[in-house]
Length: 259
Image 1 (cartoon, rainbow, N blue to C red):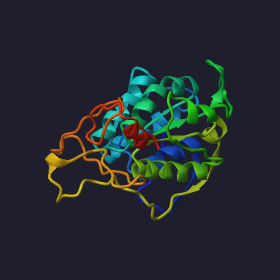
Image 2 (cartoon, helix red, strand yellow):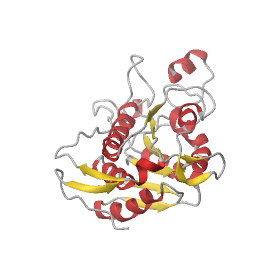
Image 3 (cartoon, rainbow, N blue to C red):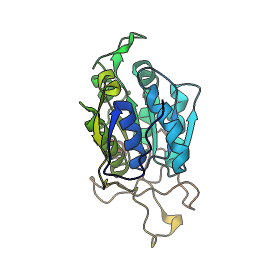
Image 4 (cartoon, one colour):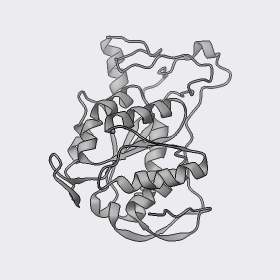
């Protein structure tokens, strides 16, 4: 399958849903994809494998779905907008790392193209049975952002929105198309101008040695995050942690982290 290469916005193309997802991810600034093939999401991996090298990005096929999200988290911590895609069985395997991305406040986008289940189920047929899993699949409690497109056009726009929300709130965002939306074809118009949110960075006036990756002055604030290798030293852990990133079992710190 050859994926269209949009040099500029304002074009109208006849796209499959998964193709629209690929083009939207590229437009939103995604430059890293790690995944493992699984029906009915495989076209996303195929498209990213073709498109990312043309825009200076990186595609890697991992050994399984668990490693795929681990690679995406690592890429995001290094400052790259990152994406992975899967379907039901693979989404189940990703749950531990979804929780890790939530607690470490790591932006990324996860596409789960829903198919019939449980288990291997109906790989080529649609279902909408993963909604509750997307919200409650990980252990523990935390807020979640989940978007579900109902058309190919909406698939494009919600993919861009998923990256923007992920960067704005420093959290993984889940996209939930089903097999029908992923595989049907519709006309999609690529906007001339697409609003893309960049990741907030620490203020240059703040000394790097005083940087605290999880420090906030109010509960609705999202702290800025540097990229690895920029001189800011901070700890990343899946344990409940204080504003410096080091483990803590304080009830108050736990409340602030998870609200």
